[in-house]
Amino acid sequence: MISFEESMDILNSLDVKECGVEKLFLNDALNRFLAEDIVASTNSPQAPTAAMDGYAIRARDQSVGRLKVVGSTPAGSGVERELGAKEAIKTFTGSLMPKGADTLIPIENVKVEGDFIQIVEPVKEGFSVREIGENYKKGELLIKKGSKISFAEIGVMASLNVVMPKVYQKPKVAILSTGSEVLEIGQQQRSEAQIRSSNNYTLEAIAALHGAKPVQLGCVEDDRKSITQAIKEGLKSADILVTTGGVSVGDYDFVKDVVREELGFEVAFKGVVIKPGQHMMVAKKDDKFIISLPGFAYSSLVTFFIYVLPLIYKMQGSRYKPYMVYATLKEPFVKRSRKTEFTPCNLYIEDGEFFVDFKGNKTGSSAILTNMLGLPKGLVITSPEELDKEIGEKVLVWIINY
Image (cartoon, rainbow, N blue to C red; front, side, top):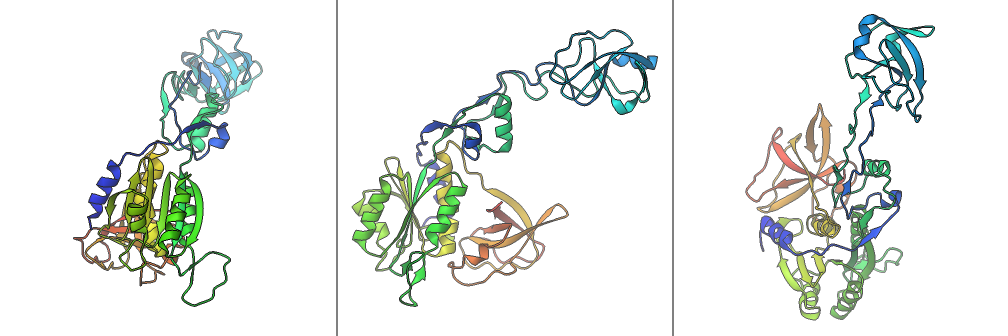
């Protein structure tokens, strides 16, 4: 067994090949990872522009009190007339500012008197004028390669007329559940010893949420030949193959032996001093990975977050950044082992501060997945050296479903 910190150092040191690149139409690229830098090809705006409806004026002319309206500039039209002294041009949100004007006075700050406006409430010079390059300047790096494309990225690229951005292809993550006691969804239960498979569907959902393309391999019995064949089939297309179960020290735990002996993968590490999930394994061969996780539902979920997500992100030219906060305990915390622990908790924000409690959580084995129901959920992370904690103490929380 190695420590949690050692396992992360090894994982981060592994050479991970990025997936290929493809071009997608802009809206189809939502939630994908950019495979190119997005650089501004022009200034935005390209000329001084009105930020609201009003009158374009020279700020110093406000002292005159009464200005003549000599024209108007609707949005989208060119500016034909240059502003002269003691003059005003009616201007609308998004309109170009006329030459000679340095200020936009809002409609509500003036009183209209025929062809003149009376200044009721003066404004400072430059008021409501968008300067050249206010939004971005030509040559400015706006979105870095490896960024996840969300609504803001879509909007910025649309403003730059980026029709088909380059994005990384989705890494394929094949998921296989092992265990002679495990039943597929829809299969008829013949014995109370049989349990319904959930791991492969839970992990498929997590992989999809984080940009991967899941490949569902279903379930296979605890048989060395069957496991070998299923993994070989999965590896034909998968970049990462994830197994659950069969990696502990029991008589029927064949996965670890199949990975090393039958498939020739090099084991980066096996066994980590964490709770849950200490019996797990990371192995690599060429550009493919096999991550073998525990069979219990909560264990497989936690270890997937810890050890699989970083690989998924690296393959998309990015880096997985866990969302961590410090929160105050609303009830005592009981440390259950001398390991790095990941304990499910309920997270609240009250008066701008984070708080956690464990209401509704069941205690028992790491098979309890229902403790992760509801939003928002987090994992309290405690080191092997930490002890029980009292109400009011701070704990480190990993928010995993924000």
